[in-house]
Length: 191
Image 1 (cartoon, rainbow, N blue to C red):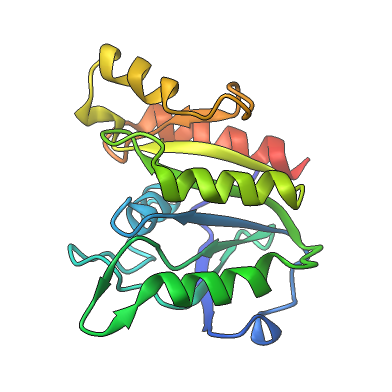
Image 2: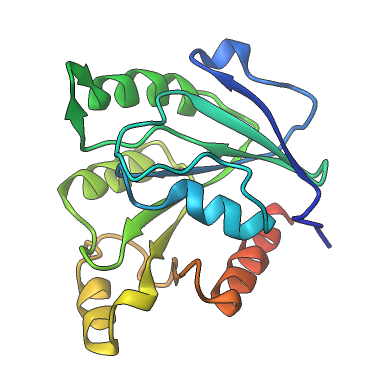
C-alpha cells in the first residue's frame, strides 16, 4: 500500500533529458489550464505540495513528485490558455511530445477534465494522440461536487465514441471518498 502522505517535490524540468531517474514508474497528470491538477495532487497527498493558482497557465514545466519512493507523479503544463505573450499550447506541445516519445517509465496518463465542461476539442485531440501512440490513460473528471447527476451523464456523453467508456473517474478535492478511489486506481495502474 502506498503512503501518499510520504510525498515530496523532486524537481521541475523544461527538458525531458533532465528528469529524475531514481524511480522507474511515472504517472502524469495532464489537462487544460485551471482544471485543478495541482489541487488534486494536494488532495492526494493531504498537503500543499503542488503550487496552486487562480491564474491559469502558471505551470510551464514538468514537475516531479516522489510518492512514497514508489513512483513519480508528474504534473504537466496545462493547455488551452495564452496570455502576456506566453503561448502555453506551444510549450505544452513541444514539451509533451518529447515527454511521451519513448518514455518507458510512463505507466499511465491521467487526463483531467473539468466535469462542468466535459471533454472538449483539445481534450479529444489528446485522447486521439494517446490512442495513436498506444499510451494508457484514464479520464479523471475534476470538480464533480459542482455538478448534479444529469450533468454527470452529459459529461460522460462528451467522451468520444471511439474511446473506452469505462476508463473514467469522477473526483472532487472536497470528497475524500473520490480521492480514495483515485488512490485505488493509481495502485491498480501500478500493479
